Length: 287
Image (cartoon, rainbow, N blue to C red; front, side):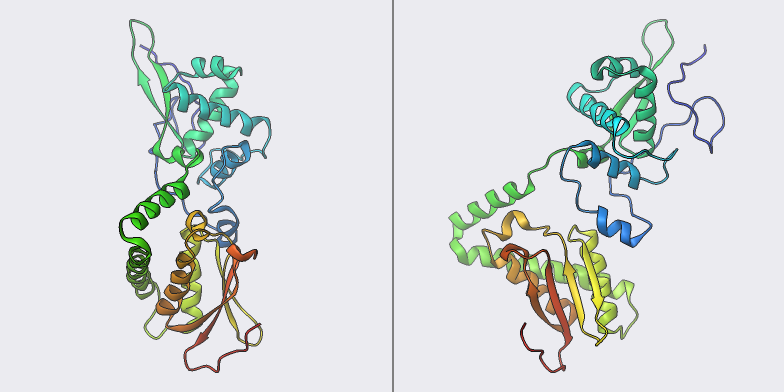
């Protein structure tokens, strides 16, 4: 019995029915560091441009993705329909979002290639089996999350139990855990005797991967800066300044350097920027 074909084969495949793609729930790496710098860490909304960014950074795409517009808006609608209504066929989705079946299939194909939806054959009755589409775990990244409020509630509970002393102990324990994790990362990625600049660059790479939009720069006079253009702990840093103090201490301990904060987002800066100097260097004058 012939099966219905809902999605055209990808260029690299043969046959009438492309195999289902396996979703990767982890964020996909960006090939270009500058692209990664500007795109990672900004998937906190639910608009068409957000979905477009996630689709554009999924590799490989079956075909070039258009700029934000009707197509990306339809992708958003398809994702919302699957989230609220559950698994659905292309016909059901087309009816739900008020679009053509062909248009919906095009968006499903792109979303499947991006690892945001999966499909399976649903056999019912004596008719031909139908494809049913559903969201993958990776699609959760596109929907609202309120981790800041969750962290705030946990910290409020900790303070209620043990006061500020326990809050300090929690952040100190977090610093020790991060120091061990990042220390292993630097040992694995860098050669023995790596320079301070090499360590700062790898630290910036780690911060970038964890949502801080980290960047390392070196001035013509050799002054090294580590900048974080996004505050990944903004949900708690405003109410708990110790979070920022511990971040500063963490950088100094991991890098084995003197680290001075020059710019601070919670204080109105556009970034958190740190001057990094060797421990035996002469301290620079404060700006």
